[in-house]
Image (cartoon, rainbow, N blue to C red; front, side):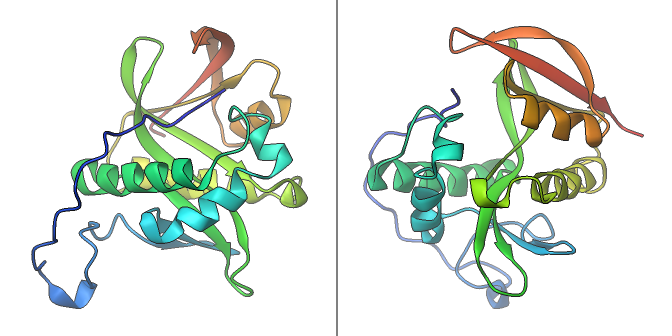
Length: 198
């Protein structure tokens, strides 16, 4: 299972005015923020998306791979953690909505994570089960790789999943990742895939 790190509960600090002010109150960097793909709008996750995360991680297909369903508190903590990661590292996960209807589809994208004993730029996705098989995970993945090898100028991106998660492994392979090796993550058998800058 995969869990986002827990963060200590601390008092909320008022935000200082940001520049330029027309970007709104969020400190998220630009152009590493919102992305629009063929079918999706991808927005950096923050507290405004806590309900979306809660609904996503209550989906049986998602919960199966992420350690069970999340409480509203866990969704809030994860959303706050991701907002802070966007602000401090310039990258983290997006929430994904359908461009036309605004319907929640899933989440995904890049983040920096400890993978197989090294800090790596990692990409992942979680899509509501009713949207499986429609190419949404690949669409999120392509947007993440465009960001990684474009704006971030990364040399390599990692992706990892439980060994038995054949659907996610198939997405990695469609995106051009190559199997590297089996690893242990949280005491469970996972597989590590890597892709280098084209």
